[in-house]
Length: 373
Image 1 (cartoon, rainbow, N blue to C red):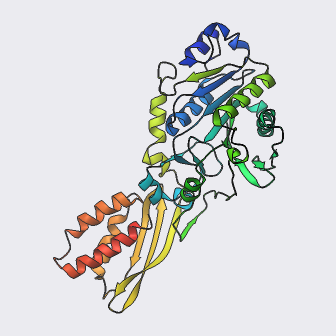
Image 2: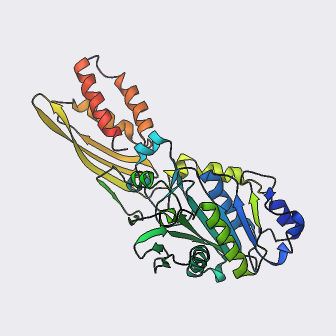
């Protein structure tokens, strides 16, 4: 159900304001500029969808500004094992999220600005939004060389990517969201988006690597606050609306009913990993044996994030066939996940013969298998 704009509804959206309520003139006949007070990626992605699903944007466009603590956000149709360094992210406590729009994988932190442009489907125009950002940047620093590309990115000095684009187009409403690199940790970005996995075959949408640069590296005065203020000002002028940035709390269910259930869904294993398009893993690794190394072959098919078929081939003289078969069958139906694999292999280990030499081989094999997850 679409909630029509009214003065009352617009005021209810505001958790805090940068201007007095009396200065919020005629919001019912114009648009809105919103900024999240949350840095939680799941809450902010949930708010995007809430606005898209519940707000009537006919003649009332919305700009939503938001930033996140360190996280990696993959597109709706992507494979996280192919797109990012999951072991490093677990170690560094960098969150992983899957958004509802398409496009490639991006790294977010507090040095990156996210902008979401909400319109009706008929007025959806990504290039116009990017040109608006360029105009805003040039009002602050006229000598900046920033241009949009045919792929709807923004390039600095003709070679450095500072913004990527994704979108969601519904039956009536649509949104275009993009990033803007201001002072992002480029080392963390690079390491987080470098997958250590190999042997994966998938039809998932792949990301295209780009050389990136922060705007602050070009001009130290270009802080996130300065950039957001400039973009909000340009947006207000273009749409002829009041230049008021309204601070909102995306976790406030009194303003956004049932939004927390959406945020909970977005951070669930079933959504982040379970929505991965079907893929297969065909790989080999070596284990020490006497004065040489033995080759172990692994063939795994994964559907909905769970192991559909598993065939781990180890030489019979190194690992008894019966135990190898137990390992293969036990993985069927389990999550393609190192935590679940550890639990399963520990349970199976208790059923194996009390043989220290065999246990050592088992541990080596299981450690290698966890390494491909």
